[in-house]
Length: 208
Ligand SMILES: Nc1ncnc2c1ncn2[C@@H]1O[C@H](COP(=O)(O)OP(=O)(O)OP(=O)(O)O)[C@@H](O)[C@H]1O
Ligand SMILES: [Mg+2]
Image (cartoon, rainbow, N blue to C red; front, side, top):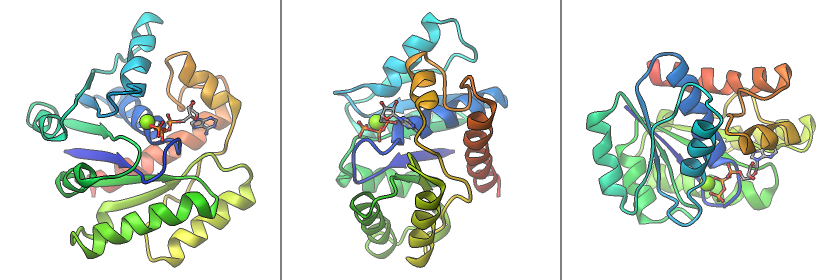
């Protein structure tokens, strides 16, 4: 099983969703492997190191891959392969999308963030014949509830599947990530519940 986290824009919480999905599936007993394709920043890999240094469990098996086709081969060895891609979707993103059981497209709420992601989703559908049900948009870093909901409406108006819940922009989330925790493991129960709801939506799509 492969879930990929792809976006056109940078800094939209792709790695954040990948880390939360890895953590919650591992907690649920899945054998997960998080493939970090961002060789420059190595966000997920460095986070997994911080997690291990803090002795947090479950430990998340993570590796950095320079080539996406090598990362994809890890699917054969793992129950769930999560692929955290580089910013600026390129030809490798298309290959990864085609191999994925679910493509999670993280996006911010502004039109500057939304439009490139929606166009990427349309490219997957029209040029690559990736089925609509394999693409899930997740609104992240929403500055307010109203802006989160407006972004969800825009995504739905384009005909895409959008997660029912969204992630607010909250310092509690970035503090957790800095400490090697996922956004489902913050100090704040309401933030954890919101993040867990999105992982539940991902799990129900994967299990359907
Ligand atoms: N909901 C949130 N609230 C506050 N900060 C957040 C939230 N989500 C992510 N962040 C912070 O925003 C930054 C970018 O998040 P992340 O690395 O997940 O995005 P990305 O799309 O993978 O970025 P990149 O394009 O650099 O790979 C990080 O510093 C992270 O801690
Ligand atoms: Mg990233």
